[in-house]
Amino acid sequence: MRRRHKKTQAELAAEIGCPKWKLSRIERARITVPPSFEVLLALRQALRVSLDYLLAGARAGMVRDPRLAERLSAVDRLPPDQTERLLLILDAFLDDPQVAPFLESR
Image (cartoon, rainbow, N blue to C red; front, side):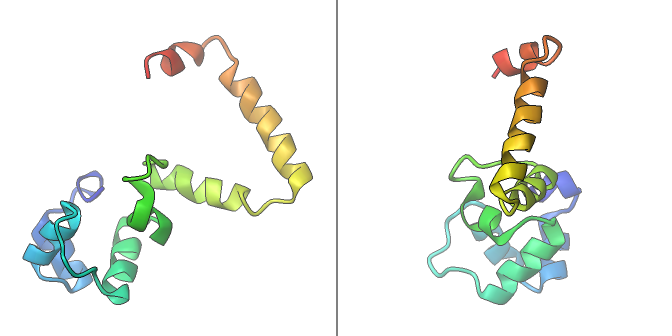
């Protein structure tokens, strides 16, 4: 995620107010004491992702693109009838023959 934002560990660590060694351990999930809430909030802001994504997203196989994750979060708050309408549109898009090759490659 940090690399998508073209930031080095040193740059991101300085931006969020965290030692570089600690950020390295957080990235590798090799930290014995969880990061503080302040560090998580700073990471969320710096990387433009949700706290859910930071805490479980990558490990849970959730959406990797933060823009898509934000939109899905907004969709999750829609009334049921609006969600159904959006699902119909999404299904139609995914059924498009031009999209199918991208789905098969995964």
